[in-house]
Length: 410
Image 1: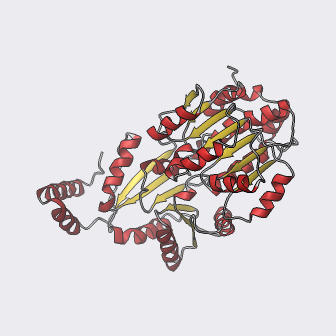
Image 2: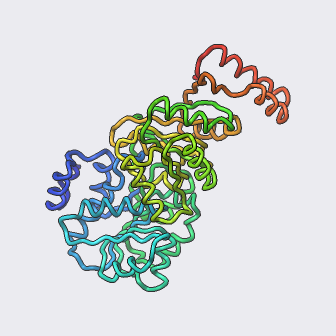
Image 3: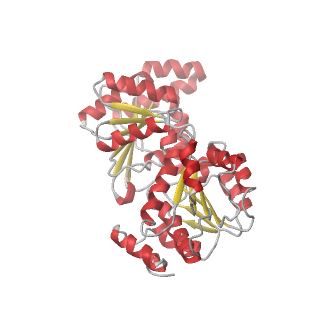
């Protein structure tokens, strides 16, 4: 293997990468690029922010240039969310800027007619979400008969969102003889099982421990009563004078409610979630990037595909339903080698979710009780006594000992 995988790429690509300031490939790029160039099926696992998109788009652009531009769709990248489709499109456009290659992004929540017009002009690379891709196949504006390579980006999220049947329908419309690539930050068992069914003798590339969090992200838990979470969040943002904060909540309703309450606290906040139009989501995100919006409150739909330079803080206002989503959430900070901080506000009702996250990432998260925001131990006692009598009392006593010692859980 070359000491620098970028040297294996087309000269035009090398010049573009040099102009963009790409000198050394990341670990996932160094290992994946030669395998993709060799036509191998690949399962790539790496933490968010390590350059997975370039790891598959660069060698695929190289292959298209070597074969010659033909106008037909040769590469299909399937993503679980609109935001991720847009991000991949931006990266492909950036890397292929000095080539005749065309790329189109297809996703719902946007007018289908401009997408139809773009496809009619020819696009070698198509990026899209499963539902909108099937829409175009149904009306005949997309043809996958000449496809060379299929990429499933964030495959674990694809399964979480119930896209497996859509993916299988897509695969029936493409040649069986093709290159297939899986890239994701986490690989639960169901994703592994799917990969081995759909890929042909795949090469496994795993950078760092699978399902691990980045070393560049400092993680901290603040135990707090559920009813005081918003108050504590506003206090932390104000006291630390944070100017760009990404906050995750579980549902559309909770993101909207929290954003409205933060506005009442004097913080410029916006909510984004899957039921907002793409235009509204884009405006909120652009306002956040420009600094007009101080706090962006998002559901897990925003955990994939958000690439915000120098984002220092991520807050988990509510822990996610799926522990794997915790990794993707906090992966929005500490990207490209920069440091970041992930703070989770955890109520007693979420203790089971916290344990599931700690089990997945194989580490105990440090906890810190903040003065004035300590959980109500009497309420804790009532809660646990209702659920288990003596067991609840033991947990209450343990918490009292932790509080008296003034130490975080180790």
